Image 1 (tube, rainbow, N blue to C red):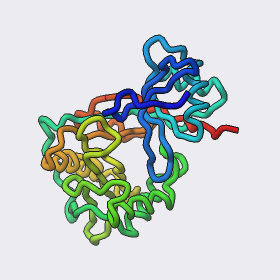
Image 2: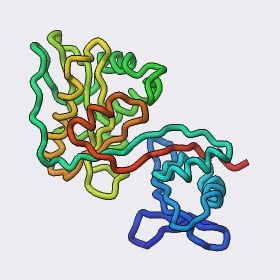
Image 3: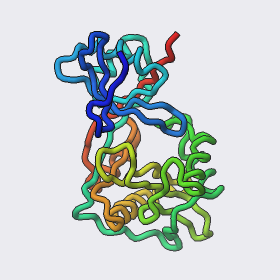
Image 4: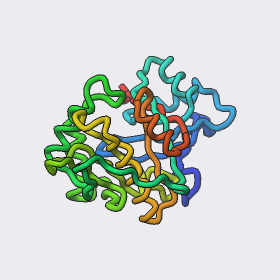
Length: 257
């Protein structure tokens, strides 16, 4: 049965069984050319095997994300692969920690992109990283944000680069906000990374706290992010007061036929 908006004035879409019975609520959008079916949440009492089968038909070719572990398990039991398991976390931007001091000779500079960052993040995101290896497409997307505001412009107040005594960039935090994939006016950390050669100096914490203060200064009520299972940065987010909002489980639905 065709997907339908739940109400005329909402972005929420309903997935229906062939007989018209509502099965799940979700949001449809595209991210850099990838069609998404986000936050797929079965309605109470829905049969999960039926939800999974209907999603495979009506949402074919999309990347499905769900906070529902049981629905993700039903899709995996049906032969699909769990692409990513992560946790969405938010900070209410009240009682912010003070900006930590930087090591001698280091500074935070306005957000941007350069070859030093591309090299450093390429080294930081190796094949064993929970989010996988850094790709040329990641660099292309970040450049497009700064040069064209596509798919969203950076939030200048909350974005920054960490530069060493030699003036070269060795880490950054990239934020946007408000962003179209949240239900409220929320700032979002799109990427936070430090080159291996500069890790252990407290730069990750400095960049994160800078983003928190910047999002607050921009008038946004919350700062959100996703952290993949197994990413050691989770301890950093916990330590500054980020709280769990939802699980984010991603499965690629194959095209029909």
